[in-house]
Length: 398
Ligand SMILES: Cc1cc2nc3c(=O)[nH]c(=O)nc-3n(C[C@H](O)[C@H](O)[C@H](O)COP(=O)(O)OP(=O)(O)OC[C@H]3O[C@@H](n4cnc5c(N)ncnc54)[C@H](O)[C@@H]3O)c2cc1C
Ligand code: SF4
Ligand code: SF4
Ligand code: SF4
Image 1 (cartoon, rainbow, N blue to C red):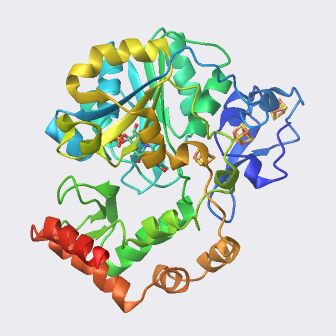
Image 2 (cartoon, rainbow, N blue to C red; image 1 turned 30 degrees about the vertical axis):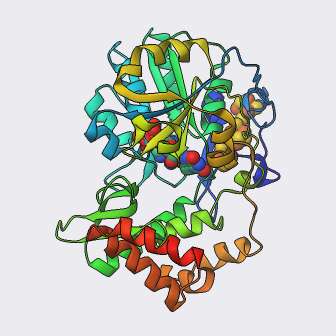
């Protein structure tokens, strides 16, 4: 039976929970807010299935039959704006929807819970667009995926590499109509930290939060902000990624799941059909991508190749230079983030500190940094961002 001796050995993928024939595993939150499997030993028959499907205990076969690499930008303005980078996911979802299929992705629901849901229309799939930098609650998605596949339907499942590997291990066989999409993954922040962050802004602005985006492109494709919307539509929180507490703690690696510091899923070849990640040098890759926002796409299977050939006309796209892509954008493909020495105290403090106290204790809040963040934000809003970048470059050269 599954026992979690070291938290770093469980990514919370839910494969063990989903496979248990006795339904005696529940996913329970620890005091950092991450879900772990807990076995009811009174019901467990010690059949060992949960151990068999754990993708950390049993690494999956990663021999690949195909490996293609592209950089893409969705031609549909609405889809491009709603997505994190180049909007690669929605055309893959559309391929499945057009065949009467079901798409699983991650939403931040009206109760501000980040979780996996499924949709049968492309309008519904717009809710999946945009990364939510919080670990999603997979719930019963793995069992639902299996049920739809057994009914003969197409299914697309998107998630972090550990979730996708967990699903593949849980299914224990290949399905022709299953399309797997994973991401290059930095790590996943704690749902408890996210809850406190949302509550903090709700109290500060006196209204219930109803929607969240980690990287909203409302101010333009080149500047991304964390945005929370509230029941009172006159209220809004919006701050550039470099100033937002959640994003800063995420990039400083204080709030990630223990398994993310020794991630077992950092590989070039994957069990997925597609791997998506940010392209930070679109113009450098191809003139056609001059608008800027673009996604790197790795295609790992012949099924993925066939799908890409059908959807490619929805993108501006080009083959990418693999070495350049890995050097420039791909540090997180193969490397886990380092665990900061203060991570332990971070989670102890989170129990009783406010978000602004956490910010003061763990992040640089100096006057110069705060001024830089504010200037960047205002320059963008008033259309002076290009000038800001030129001045910054000029100062850098001096
Ligand atoms: C937790 C996390 C960490 C990431 N780390 C990196 C990184 O280090 N480097 C990098 O280049 N890219 C990273 N990405 C991927 C990046 O943010 C974009 O998702 C990617 O560039 C694809 O963008 P897109 O515009 O093509 O698709 P989008 O339209 O943005 O599609 C996003 C897809 O991600 C799924 N998704 C959203 N939130 C989550 C979540 N919390 N958990 C699982 N799946 C989710 C959605 O279901 C959807 O299918 C990360 C994404 C997540 C969610
Ligand atoms: S050993 Fe079998 S019965 Fe026990 S928890 Fe694992 S899957 Fe369930
Ligand atoms: S990694 Fe997944 S399968 Fe393994 S113990 Fe954790 S939740 Fe269960
Ligand atoms: S870093 Fe690894 S363990 Fe952490 S969420 Fe991403 S894929 Fe899973």
